Image (cartoon, rainbow over all chains, first blue to last red; front, side):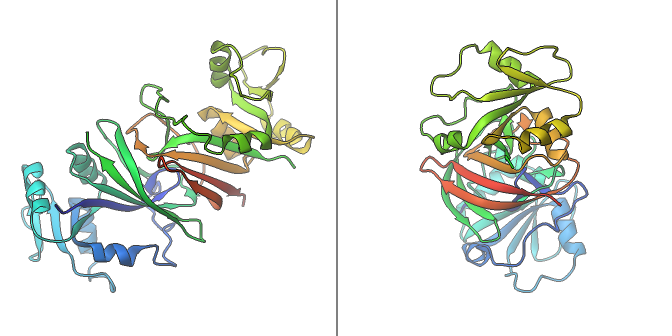
Length: 173
Length: 173
């Protein structure tokens, strides 16, 4: 079964964006495990806003492998031709994708899709890059979780810049 | 100069208490660095609510050393005879305490005192015991931070239960 991994950069106080949407605090000076992660996944899950932002940013970032992209939205009618639109019964479709062929899946955001998939029990792992900064506000890593979620720490690595990278398995009851 | 260290248990999503004030998720099965920390500090800073809760809980917990206690409140008129009430110009008084004799100081909570001291630049270190759980809501580690705070990771230790203990220095501009 393919795994869905929520992989994000987060401040020590638990924000994925600053109060004005900033992500200038995200460290880019090192690989921080990204190239290994990139080999593990071949597919992206993203919500509408994240998709629209990615489209607006235009060209494919260099060094970023070509992923199979699923865009989750109940309002969009179409997406770019090499992406796949998912709407309606998310649970059934995600389970189908997870049962299919392929490597693991990177849950790329945003907050709303993340919460939906978390609450449906469809996320398997969290990979957090905890940055040595307090943002004091902004968009929290999770919103609208319906219940506690127990985690199992699989792996952690500390970098000389103070970034702590941690991989957790989500324990499904 | 004595240091003020905010030392708390926190969920991976950044809460120090669950949605109903729960802290049953805090791991107590191991020492988790507490006995070393206890030798480093000899003084507690606490807000009114934390103080009242401690008083209500009654007797001194066994194994807990005797600390010098400062209670920060602008509404209390008196505190128990072995504690010291601090009100009015917090900044001056905390600076005076920090310049005085003694070991380091454990900022014990709660949220309101923590925010005040953080915003006044009077906290020197953060010591977090990050628990492998998502609470999904509750009392956040910080509220009302007025600005970003840069941190320097001093030390981190991962336990077999998945708890990650991290000590950060707060970088004052």
